[in-house]
Length: 431
Ligand code: URA
Image 1 (cartoon, protein in one colour):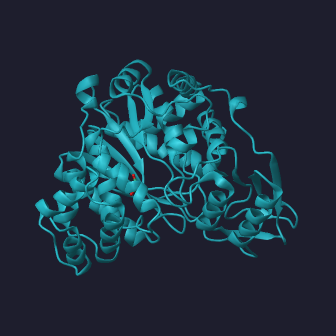
Image 2: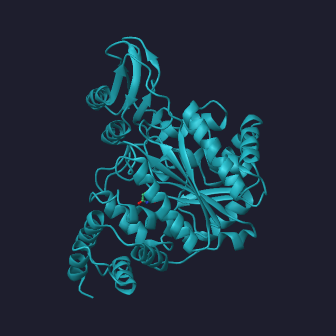
Image 3: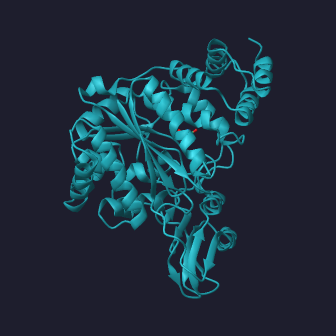
């Protein structure tokens, strides 16, 4: 195999045969292809795309790069899984997991770290003191069996090709490509042995898919990969034109997820969590439809059983579930509205980048995340705001960082004089 030639062929729009594409990916996973060549190939894919057959070959090779897990067989249950394509303030798994588990459906999930301006569930969970994201496969299976819930980092053995590619794409401008996202997500879901998957495809300024049409293409690509593997897949296309909920930043988001599990979360995030739970329960072996799933999810929140599962889960993974254990940033400053009006928009991308610059995300592969910092969006689209009232709150390491973030946040907010059209958080369901 001559890697430069494969890069050129993809760059020229030529379809690679499955065996050549697989060899490239497997050689990269073995460390025989350097990052710079793989980054160049990803960039060629970014501009040229991949055919359906190539996307399937890529997904299949990524799965074959490591071991696979049959969680369903290990538990003797149908296993449902969820995954989000990534957004700003997206702490959905941390709230959905305990609710679904409280409804009697085992939830074992492998999550990722932040990618570009979007946060990652693992980084958020690591803001909980003591929480271990790296469990062995045996520990993972045992915890799902005993606690009903485990969320861990992708084990080194499972889809190692994606682990390397994901980190490479994050810092080489090659994240927002339909075949790369679809193969990344579906390889992990299929390798982890999910029987059915609910996918949250984010749409808008803060998502990798900026338009509903692009999101539909990504959803269809992932549905096709699922169909090919004989799995049930449902895609929720959801709004990411403003941050989800109010909190953006790791510890801040864990607090908001717990508030939501207690029934005290912000309306848009609560709606997405309950809707996601409804679809997961409908895909599960409980034999309920989405309406009944929703009713059960609401009950698990109202009667405190979801919160009890949350606490059990965090302890099982070595963490302290008390919210008092989460770090606070030393500097907290409000961002006052420059004038009165109605919030017409709170740009998710700009707010996500401002949070990343505060230290909540990574600029390079080697960066460490500051779990305490971030942004709380006090005002959301459609809110009426008085002059001087806080649009947002910045949680920063220093006054200088806080000022830079506050300036960026002011640019991200649009204040108008009329109410913007209302938009529900779940825009469309594709299955
Ligand atoms: N989430 C993933 O797991 N992979 C991507 O490429 C994007 C979002």
